[in-house]
Image 1 (cartoon, rainbow, N blue to C red):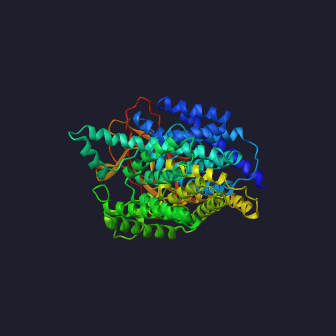
Image 2 (image 1 turned 90 degrees about the vertical axis):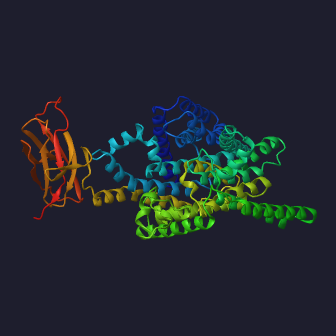
Image 3 (image 1 turned 90 degrees about the horizontal axis):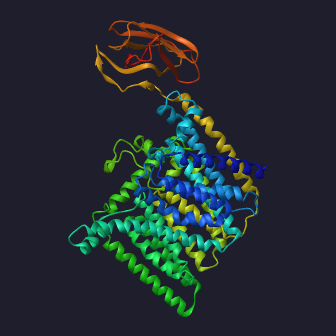
Length: 616
């Protein structure tokens, strides 16, 4: 049964990924952003490990390419297409399972929670955006380009899809590394090179700005103290990723075959980390270095221990110096930043209390945050994210989401404990721990690029651990994932039933100033309005537009059933009484059509006033 369920999820995931991949190829983006994913798909079909290496190196910088080419769909989706290319190619090539994987069941649960949460809230949002469109039509609109629009990146569907994609690349990486352990340092090396390219873009932007001044050297020093730069949409997320990759990359220094490449890339990443200006990432990195040094000191003897203690003292001194000198206009005061996060933690807890089990919906924290935390909002905060990935997950996906995240991290760190047998694995584990530490003061997983990088390295680390046994708890995770996924449509139906669609419509303009004491919207020959469907009668003011045919006959229908037919004449408002049958939802969509009107008739034809609920 477990194998059948996993197989079904795999087929569904590959089908959904293929639909997005094809849609991207039909989207108006620069041709190079189509060719690269297509070429990577072919490579991944032929040799999945090579595809994974190319994605690890190219993914972090393809966003910069998208910026240079002024792609209207931004950097995130360009990286996403590379991930999809590897997931689809490797998924089709490696169809048969070999050995159990550490991350399969936890990743499935995390993906199921995210997708179910999006299913629960996205349909209602789409109805507000496209009233009256069927589910099939909504998907057609999304896949024809709306999904790739920058605005969609902040919507539940996008968060859920990219979470599932990141988890899929983790499983693929684990599978490939488990088959060939020599692939692990190669993937980390390519990740280091790719993020060095990401950091180099920031460095070039600062250098270019300095070269435009009369004193380039002094300008560079000033800019290093004052600016925060990254091609990432969130510079703090960029700092989290660069700190992780920097520490993981240090584990490659002992490899003489690529030492020169590593030693060239790591300083570039360090400068990129500085330019991100993330104090949380810098603190987490210092803690990671200190932790590694303490472990090394405990394990070594004699002169080796003295060297490690000296390195530990040096790292501590550097950390103190950075903390003392890290001042400037690019960051608010530390006390302000801490107070900001403290307030947002209260908002997150209040939000979680409103929906403790399943949360308010993935990607909904920003929109919902203004409703929580009380009327006194310090620092001018209105809408914000939690600045804590754990609390963000708790508020958006409830206890189920937080538990799923903790199960995933627990599985990962258990695998790390078994895999840490060398300098490389110690530094890789430390880098991942540093990234997770930044979750306490930030939310890097809200940025898809950061999630892709984290879960890629998580998959590499898991692949180095011994294969897990398929115990009862793993089978339970699969069943829980199925149960959670089933709740999505149920929650969506309830949300739509209870939704307030008052004044929502299609084919109508925004509100206009009063005309003879009535505020109104303009409509053409066909328009739609949501009206109460609890059996309560309403009056709807209608009036013929000045240039419309006189008289004008308007028919109102719910489905194929006519609920009203009115004749508009002259220039007077007519209060139309409409009473819809009582159904199990608060509002029903009513279609209004002007009958007998020539298609060449001028628009607007109808003026529509505000609906007024009447007593029986």
